[in-house]
Image (cartoon, rainbow, N blue to C red):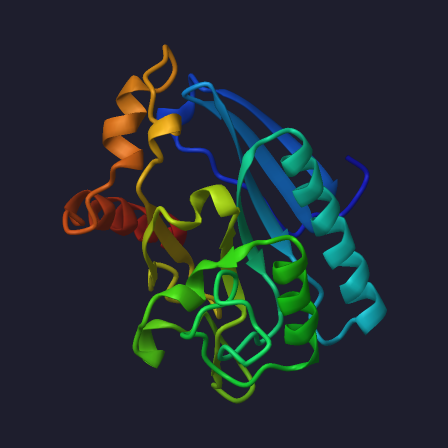
Length: 231
């Protein structure tokens, strides 16, 4: 595509028969549009510039992400954004809207965190990490190689239509050799998205109504992925 890319989206084989389309905004932002039960869903993966880049470059990436989110609204899609924000959002403060930033972020908000918080508020995106009480050891998503400091700089955001359907979010230690820990978001599929169609009748039971307590299949997959990555 003529540019460097730092993000991707992995599509599970169970989704192979869905109506889906990949798209790219910049080398830092990609998205997947899926038609599920007659309703459009957009999954976005983004990687915002780290502190080695200027604040102007960071702001430009946020603007590009905002354009993708606005396109989601205009197409009446439901949106989930996974982002390495390279920003510390931290704890809820007095000016935060609790619909968008909850009480359970960790750390002290930095300058990029202020920009990211503004993005969430402006676009009515709920930062799911901040909505569930977790121990700090189960909340951090990034460890600095230089100091070992554990930070929460990776986030999952959901659009208003999905906010009330969030059930849980947790980190995973699947990538032992990485400085980042991935996030697993669990939400109950809204009724208007759960209508059976020729594409999604099996997905509705196997994926969207995922039982958090039944982790055996997930751990099996995690172990096979670890083996593959180490070979």
